[in-house]
Length: 250
Ligand SMILES: Nc1ncnc2c1ncn2[C@@H]1O[C@H](COP(=O)(O)OP(=O)(O)O)[C@@H](O)[C@H]1O
Ligand SMILES: [Mg+2]
Image (cartoon, rainbow, N blue to C red; front, side, top):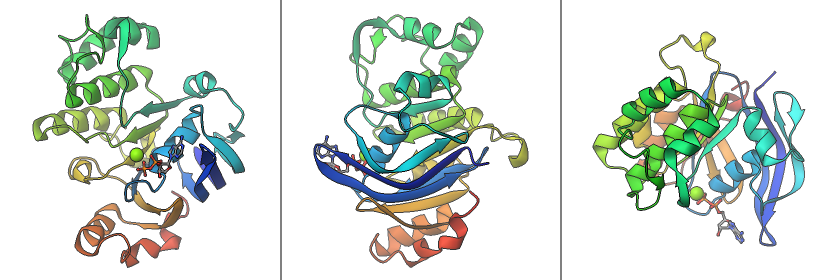
C-alpha cells in the first residue's frame, strides 16, 4: 500500500479551477520532487493534501495510509503524520518559538539538538517568525517539522530566499528528517519537495520528479535529468517529462 495515493484530484480556489486531475502515488521512504512554472498549482496541491481552508476538492480522492482524508480536519491530518513547510511561513505575534516547539513535541533534548543543528538556538525566546529574515523563517519552519517528525513531509520551496550557506544547513536537517543515512528499504519517511531553483537536488537525493503545468502533471522521470532538461529547453519542451511508466510504484 502506498503512503499517499492521489487519484483524479480536481481542486478549485476562489471559484477558479486550479488542479485539473492530479494522479500521484508515493511509497513509504521515497522522496518526490515537483517542478513547474509559477502558478501551475504546486502549492495548491500541498495545501489540498494537508487540508488548508479555502481549497475545494471538486473531484477525486486523497488516500493517506489507505484512508480517504478528503473530509478529515487539518489537525487530525497533522496528528496522523502529515507535515508541511510553507512557501511563505507566517509570523505569529505573541507566541514564542520555544512554546510552539514544546507544544508540537514535549522533548527538550530533541529541541535543543535540532535548534543547534539549524542555528536557531538563539531564536527560541522570540515570537514565531516575527522580524525573521527569509532564511531564518525557512529554518524555523524546518525546525518545527523536525519536532513534528511527520511520516509525510510536504516542503514548498524550502530553499527559496535562503543563502547558499544556509541551504546546506537546511538540506542536512532534511536529510536527517528523511533518514537518508539509512538504506532505502529501511526508510519510513517520505517527502514531496517543490523546488523552483533545483538547488536542493545538489544535497538531497530524490527518487522521482514530476512536472506540473497548468494544474496537470505532465509526467515524471529522474530528478536530475528532468531538471537539466528544463534548464536547457524550458518547461514546454521537456520531453523526458513524459515517461509515464517511471511514475508508477513511487
Ligand atoms: N484563493 C485563490 N483564489 C483565486 N486564485 C487562486 C487562489 N489561490 C491560488 N490561486 C491561483 O491558482 C494558481 C496556482 O497557484 P499556486 O498553487 O500557488 O501555484 P504555484 O505554487 O505552482 O506557483 C495561481 O494562478 C493562483 O493565482
Ligand atoms: Mg507555490
